[in-house]
Image (cartoon, rainbow, N blue to C red; front, side):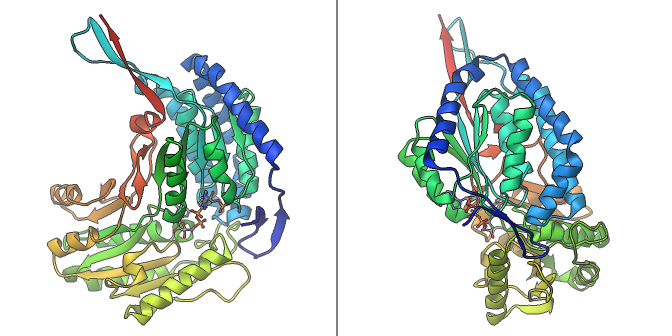
Length: 454
Ligand code: NDP
């Protein structure tokens, strides 16, 4: 994929970027390797003060950064502003909590003193996607930097401006040379980067195809990986749910970011008893969406980020319809410039359809009928992806019992699945493995050293 900025709202190519040549790439890898020992030796307080300065710069530059996100990948301006705020939050969160998260853990043994001590691992390669072009990077980089690891960013080729802006933030906040670098390279050069001795671990968020390739390359070089790949989250509406709230959250969760979120609700599993009432509300919510220029605040549905992603989504919708899904709304690209797809509702979705089996990464809600709670649970768990899921019921205990049986990494009761720096984020199955955020996230890329003193 060419490294280029194309405005998703107009389809116009704004700027092409030259990929780094081999010498420039090697210089950045060497710089990371050289910086690693010094960064590891800095006190935790020094490393955390960098994060505090980055957070301050994110807030100071919020408007410009949000505008950049909007014109580069098409996100609604209000959502882009929220994304920048959340990046500042995750930096501050780790600045405040890294000491506790990384603290020695005493363990009683035959030693006078034995414990787990967290030591830095070395440079982490972050292979990141375009859908949250700042958040995905900071979710990985803030804990890695606090833990004492330099970060090398290979960002998606359609968000080079964001990739360079992140590097600028770190530089202006005073990150020492080599502690953070953006690698403007194509995907086919990532394997060589993984092989480089500077790189000690890899974190990838993206498609399962990319995840498999990167994990295979990292495995060949015995480097640790954390993978956050696709999701096809279930959104289960039980017969005692608050239907107004559930439908409201269903529309928000499915259509924010034009449906391009790993934790968007994608499969709506609705008990027969409330299906008619829920669907009426869901249809009304979808009908009210207003596609348009994402820079305008009255717009409520953004374009998709790239033409190929929109075309792939359309093919999935068509194949699902050929297999018997009923199109209730939308179902085609919008007839206007840019990469817009009509807000779409597919009903009576069943196994064997892409809308049931695969991830629909765009503004398409798939509704699956379920006779009762047990069938709803079976369908919710009938997915190769295991990222998140939510269940809606007025009975919190019933909801929690249901959520505990959901086969996914993040189960929510009466709330849309979201990430939060305080809570672990990740999943099972084809979603990948490992956890981001919270104490678990910062401990992924450290050497948890056993210390034994007689
Ligand atoms: P990709 O997985 O192709 O891209 C994600 C990142 O991985 C980008 O930086 C990309 O670089 C890089 N990459 C791609 N292939 C390789 C490779 N072989 N080796 C190393 N790095 C690689 O996702 P797409 O943008 O093409 O989106 C396709 C689908 O992936 C979506 O429709 C969605 O289903 C899923 N996806 C999931 C996301 C999530 O949040 N879980 C985020 C984005 C996508 P480059 O851009 O240069 O190709």
